[in-house]
Length: 149
Image (cartoon, rainbow, N blue to C red; front, side, top):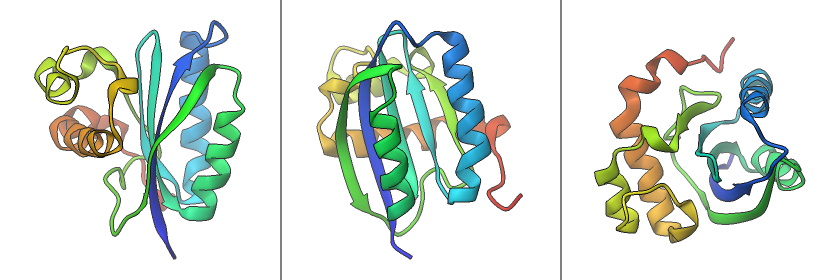
């Protein structure tokens, strides 16, 4: 089975509020284990950045559905590559707010210290995702959900 990591960014629309974010997480955490998809969603009041990992067909199908979702616009694929192992293998969908990210970490990738994923190159997006899981593993522990349930 070929595993891939897909990272995209988008801008939130008025159709996306706190209840919509909670619904996205609920549906992701319910459906992703059956698809063998793991990942992370990071958002702030303007942007989404999401990393999806799993079998290429499952990730591709999910991304196609995500791109049509009216809760965001300007869906932009930043990175797509085959991977040997998952960064978010323990999470059906980890969740962070942009203000949960360390400003030093954000400056490393954008210079301004603010979460703006549209400023990232594909390589920076990859590095940021890996740095997030390494730096925030403890914070994300309570979000771990087994894919084997």
